Image 1 (tube, rainbow, N blue to C red):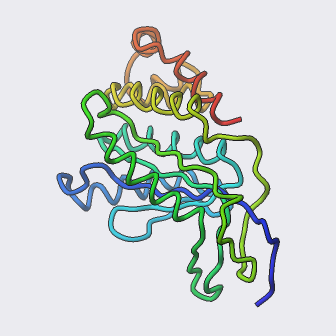
Image 2: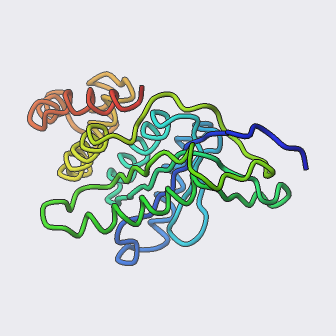
Image 3: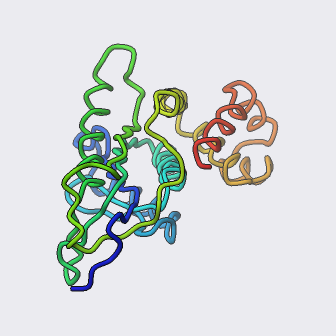
Length: 229
């Protein structure tokens, strides 16, 4: 097995459906399948189902990962579902190239971040948070360069209190939106015209405009885009 870069780097993301057991499993699966199809081609390894109610994906940067998590969450929110994410950065090792089994610090950190954000959401006043950002593991001890790894080099630091707080604020704002208003926000982010979004949501253009203004969706969209760069 050939050896790749010693300090290979990528951003691993694990997603987990919130309160999945209370939903109709067939309807949930179809909604997730439809939402994932809209993200096909995004990332080094696009989001895909793994075990139970989880999905996984690999991205070159934190910005790309956050853009994908925001898009997927809004799609699911439109259908009445929600999802939380754990994000970890660092080495990703290819344990078995034939089966695609992976390991490494990025996945370990993503799992820890997912567990931490799930716990934080049980704290009074924090119920709406959905994005767990793990510390960058690029320089952690224990990296095994004898294993294959995939990824790129880190862009800029994302494991800061400011970015973490911004992600949580965005999460909380999205959590306060009803399904249809989540669809209006998605339209803004995807560059739809007001008329196109209104037609998709079966409402009048004036009603869609009122939603944008009433829920302060433009500054929310701007904050979301700021995390993608």
